[in-house]
Amino acid sequence: MIKNIKHKTFWASMISSWILAGCSQSVEDLHDYIEQQKAAYVGSVKPIPQFKPYESFTYTAYDLRDPFEAAIDIEEEQNKADLLTPDKARPRQPLEAFPLDTLRMVGVLEQGENLWGLIEDPKQVVHRVQVGNYMGQNEGAITGISEGEIFLVEIISDGVGGYLERNASIAIGNE
Image (cartoon, rainbow, N blue to C red; front, top):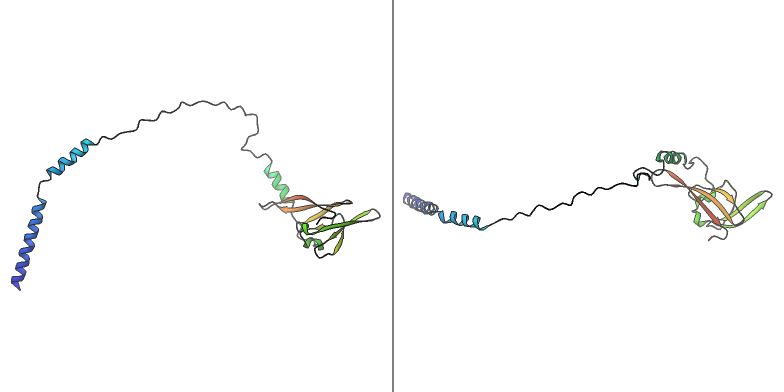
């Protein structure tokens, strides 16, 4: 057993001496090669680009509206929009259950000084309306009635939390 350990130790020392002998070789040829490669490479630097000289500009639109200022008074429009809101407490009328494009004017009725509009809903029920009544799903208030048309003003959302008024009408025979 001792003989085996001595044998292994002998071979380990021999291999390590060969490895160390291989490392002790001269590396002078490697240094020469590196110096040759450094001398052969010639780098290039791009020339500095030539810039055009600054040309001055004379602004001639000084008397026109500033494009960075609002064309309308935003606060005034916001105050108007705040005042215009649907009346949620108002009792709903029967024709407000239907979209405006599903209602049809079928005629007018005149009683003394009053002119009434006749509106047919999608269920084929005819309703008598007058100025001040509501119809459609956008708070459509009737503002006028003529022989062939009923005029309304609707309150619709502007998409940013406010409301806008929109004119609408239903003509006789509208289908």
